[in-house]
Image 1: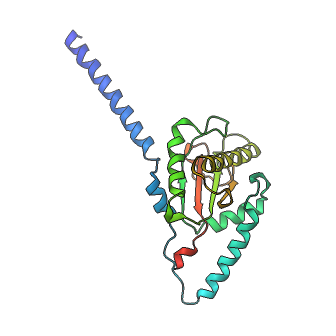
Image 2 (image 1 turned 180 degrees about the horizontal axis):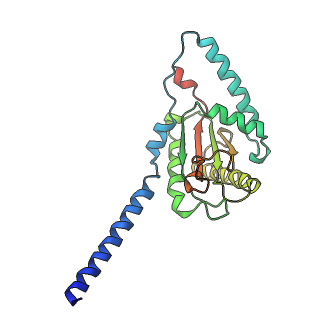
Image 3 (image 1 turned 60 degrees about the vertical axis):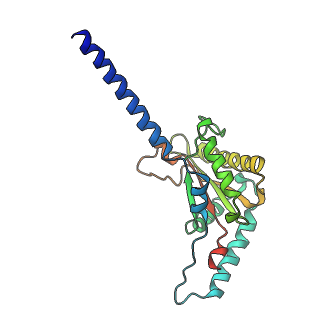
Length: 213
């Protein structure tokens, strides 16, 4: 191989590595949402009623939901029973929500430096006037690596960390932030339990009464 060939061979390798790194950064950035995107995802959707469902039925359902939410406000995340966690999940299934791939330090509830921007975007979003007065569920999820009991506790600690950050840095009312941990019980990709996509924080707008106005 001539010196000319070696030179351009090295340039090609360098360019290839640079393109690969750029692609990786682009993919990583795809999981980061702006504050505006989070607000749009959590805004109450216009209410749609069936022919047999009237305002009275809507009011009754909302009253039951509000009563339940009041029983879990300001509760320690670890104090929630399995039944209460499942009831929160059931209510959250029909509410505006967003999954944020917020990473934490390994085996820790400390927010990773690479995810601080995502938590800051969340704080700005939840402070937006469009979401004022809503009650939010902050749900922690882990992947399936490790023991089930350990992952349950880890998801609870991580949800608590997000709540504490939002309260301290954005002045959000802790009474409006309900934290819950699901460990590895609700994997986003059940076929690949170890996939990082399962390690996430889901935020749900539980107060959607404004959607019916």
